[in-house]
Image (cartoon, rainbow, N blue to C red; front, side):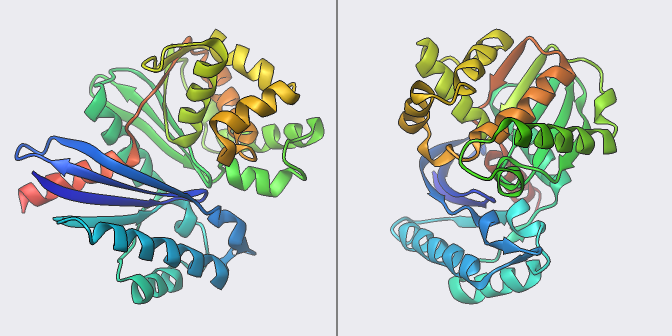
Amino acid sequence: MKKYAVIDIGSNTVRMVVYTVEENDTFHALFSKKYTLGLAGYVQDGVMSQEGIHRLCGVLIECRMLLSQFEMERSFVFATASLRNIQNTREAADQIFLMTGFSVDVISGQAEAYLDYYGVMVEAPLENGLLFDIGGGSTELVTMAHDGPGVIESLPIGSLTLAKEYVGKVFPKQSECEKIQARIRKELKKRKLHRLPAHTSLCGVGGTARSLLLLAQEQQELPDTQRLLTAGQLKKLEKLLWKKDNTARELLLKNCPDRLHTIYTGMLILDELVELSQCETIYISQYGVREGYLRRELARKRKA
């Protein structure tokens, strides 16, 4: 079996996953490593600072050192909203290449949404529903049907960018929540997504969705293997978290301390999607954009 690495540079975290790939292109994660950088916090007036670029390069150099201990077939590095939503994308990518040797593929929002879908389909061939990926700097949406993906959209808002723009302290105040909700609705309406038909099921991808699942499992004593939440179970979790008391803080600090400042803005985005879709269940996928990216690259190699 051959080994491939995929490094995903997001607005909040950088994740590296090493996969073993069999002859038929079936793959399994061998190990993963996450770095919480909060790159969106290094962007001022649309430009990523040198400090942010240097911190990212430091992480990528560490990734390269770890990968040097394995016999790697190939390593892929891609960036989502972290680099595509800044004005100095090209300069940052060139600097990263000079300092680390990694060539970064900056993917579009539409490509990210499709790769989310492509990755989810490895695990479960979902025939209908609405797929969402609430990231740090953007939110991707894909309608799913039996004949493939339908509407594919990328919203330029994410859990970290909304927190940075609207939240003064760690937890948002009521007035800040109202401004965030208005912004989310504006972005949905701008793309006519407020007119989407109802979906009984949602499929969540990414760190926000996985964190909410983990929190619900802990709060409601659900099995670790359970990946499906009902709308009622999500509402029960949110009712506790919005109290913002010691119980809520302890739950967050125990299960996802690195998302303390973004989980509330992520929930506000999800709440709008739940209301829009009138969903009954939310399935949290363990696969997403990284698996979709690897799957696409393996397919390209096979065709070459």
